[in-house]
Each structure stands twice: as C-alpha cells, then as structure tokens.
Image (tube, rainbow, N blue to C red; front, side):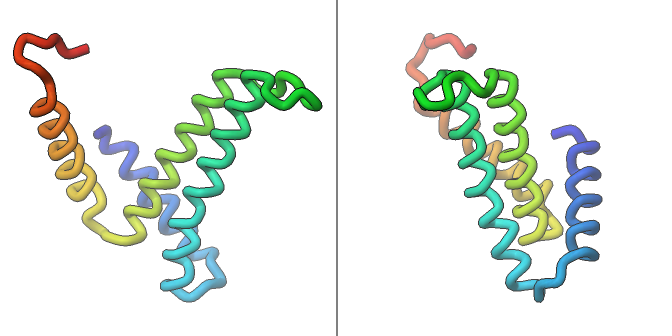
Length: 113
C-alpha cells in the first residue's frame, strides 16, 4: 500500500488524538463505531443512486457511492492505526492472507482478473 496513505492515516490519528475530549479507551471505541456510520452513508448513497426511495427519487450518483466507500476504507485504517502502531504491518499481513486464501480457492487453469 502506498506509504502516503499511512502517512495520512498517522496525521489524522494524531489530529484526532489531540482534539478528542474522550479518554483513550472511549476514543478507540468511537473510532471503531465510526465505521458503522460510514457504511450507513454508503447504503444511503446506493439507495439514492438507484432511486429506491420513491419519496426522494435519485439523490446520489455512483461517484458519490465511490467516495463513501473510500470514507469506509479510510475510517477502517484510522481505527486500525488507533488499535496498533503497527497498522501497516498488520494490514499487509492480512492482505497476504486474503490473497493466499482466494488463490487457494481458485480452480486450476482459472484465470485471474
């Protein structure tokens, strides 16, 4: 993963730490709960992009959905970094595990896309 991403995550975590009125344990929980809020915003954007609320109609674009998904990813990285200073290593190890697991489930001769 691009080191600039982790630099940005570290910057945001430091800023949040400085500004938080909560004790560290509560702040940690709040950052994890932030993920639920962001996932809800993805759902709202999908509903808005597909016009599934007849009262509101189409209120979002698929680009809005993409932005909300990025917010989920970034919030998850901030939460992970809040839990461990080794967030980049933990993420890289988990990525390798998922890559291996998904490769192991592919049938022989199946192309990777």
